[in-house]
View 1 (tube, rainbow, N blue to C red):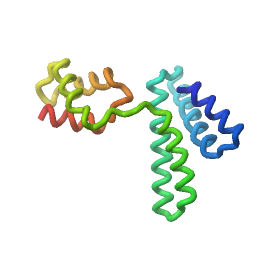
View 2: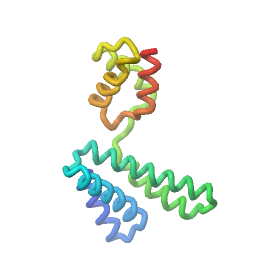
View 3: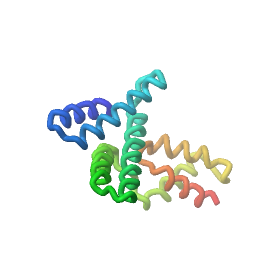
View 4: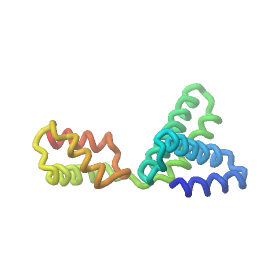
Length: 145
């Protein structure tokens, strides 16, 4: 992910693409800052999580500018968010969650809400960044309730 971001950032700078330069630059800076703070190189999963977070920041800022009546700035920031979102791996569809949750519950042998953490850990291990943790959490709660 980091190498891909570097290439995209460089291409955006050469093409004088303001949105690309801003989006890819912010994501790269966030990854590099995280690596320095953690004193380790990020693997693909951590890099993807950082890019997701940066995309969320751009999206949130775009919404704030929209509410403030600054639609031009909101459109710029939304374009940045869209560029980063396009780099992320596809998320599982909502209809797939009941099946994967029941498989994880069976694998862990969970029978009560006390074991929700173990089920969530198994889901995260098996499906990683493809999971939407909010949807997964709700599905696990429903299944264990």
